[in-house]
Length: 316
Image 1 (cartoon, rainbow, N blue to C red):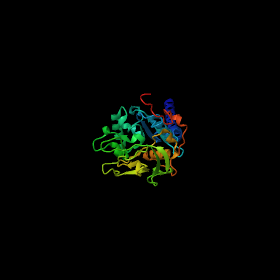
Image 2 (cartoon, one colour):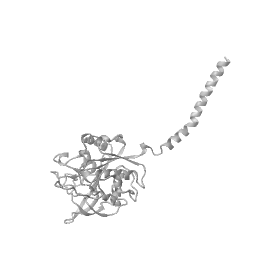
Image 3 (cartoon, rainbow, N blue to C red):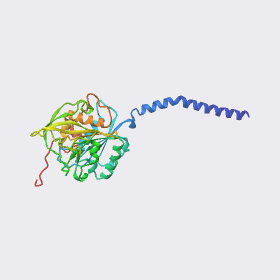
């Protein structure tokens, strides 16, 4: 009896003491978990950079290098923390769950969603992402669509996701691509995308006569001009060379028709304009001074060339 009593008492005492230790240690367990994962992948704002195919001359478009540069800037913003970026060159390379991305950046010759080998899956997945309020930004020719991408009326999801597109020799509309010494200014200085960058002039290919909708090419409800330029030089008028939209699904989209020349990523105002757009579409807070970034040498991102190199003729 005595032995059994002592055995039972010791067991009960050990159990009670064990629970006491757990209760005493529990706050410390939570503390060390918080310290080991202060920001955590789940709390990071993730951006997906999608690089489509390109056949342009070295030093122009440079979509692979441009995509890597964008991701570098997103992850190394000097005055905004907590952003991460993934770069993919095919839709099948997207390994993270799609609902982890706050915004998608598209760069390529025409909208990558329509040009990647697995474009049907890409467009289906993008449709779902946009429906849940994911942001989207398209860069330069990444804003472009062709006749084959749409019906005769010119309707396409990109028109609604982003507010417009560059119509590449389409039957319903003809956008224009030429090189200019273009002066770029914000369309609305009160908008967060306009923060921190000033009017700038550079040799570029900002697309004009972009397509915004069937009502005499007027912007659709929710869409707005982001940046404008007086073009073309011989007959200047206020052209929308970057635009945006706030969608009913709560998502945000921006189309920016630059840069054509890879070296123009060195222009701090252009870069800040683009980074502001990415952060805004990801529903982040754009600081009053805009997004600050610094770049290493442009060669770091492995372009074919930093400077424009004309393609050799077939006879060469």
